[in-house]
Length: 356
Ligand code: AFP
Image (cartoon, rainbow, N blue to C red; front, side):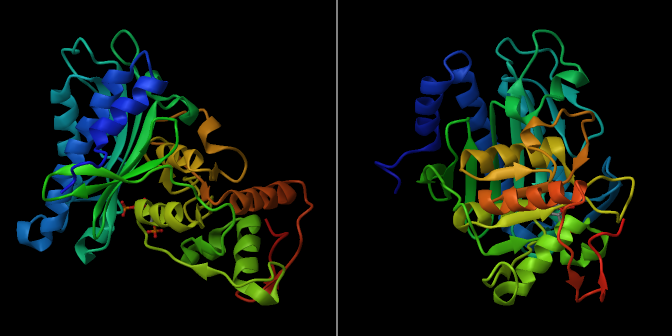
């Protein structure tokens, strides 16, 4: 039983009372609504093949990606929650072309939400952890325009994610630390199990899809080469690599034990400056990471200071342990100034750092 332990609602009431006097009660209630949607998605994902909802649909989302049945069901769970909850004036989902205004606007609708309802959904059919990511920003007085959603990440009021793994966890921040809650399935409550998460400043673990190595920029190739060289190279210690292909699961591991996660700029598809989406993935995860003492960079600047231009904008992402993120950013800076160190890539058997 959870008696005597801190439930999500109790924790949020305390946090927002202290730090969000103006909009506190509404913000706490909205996060409780988000937790309700997460419980519904957790129940669906846990049923797996038994529910007959695995597999793909004929449809594609706005990014041209084939939608999974659970992508659509999870999207609907969030949309219904927000439309019925009375706290949101509009919402933007990775799965929908345009933001959706909640009409008629409820009297207490002081927020806009942006979310990726089921991140890593290509892992669903193989029973590997997936998640949901969300961001909350202030709503304008009148009907929200597209511009109202396009606020830099440092203006988020709250952000977080749910991970549907062996246990379901909700990890969130309202700007006062990052805190983790575990779903007690028997009583249906999220219980505070990981207060004030702190990411170790240094690490010996990195996460990147190395099949893209030939498409990376030289500073990222340099960083990864140095990690792979381990004890025999400039880092002087061995590194480990992990890649789940579900950002939520990779970032969750980093929050728990340190590491650096990279989906950097690459030339695989020159029309895309990165794979991950600024508004639904990079911004909320960067707020969570920074509030846990980590860092979040594009390689050339702090993610939370990027001025968004499009709702489905993609961006390079380098997040995690502060010292490692700073090192990768330093390598970008040195490369841009032509001051980087050359190395011999064993993979390509040629000097690759100064190539363009
Ligand atoms: P899906 O939701 O389409 O599975 O994409 C997941 C994701 O956006 C992110 O969660 C992963 O880190 C990344 O893509 C995995 O990309 P790779 O396919 O290159 O491994």
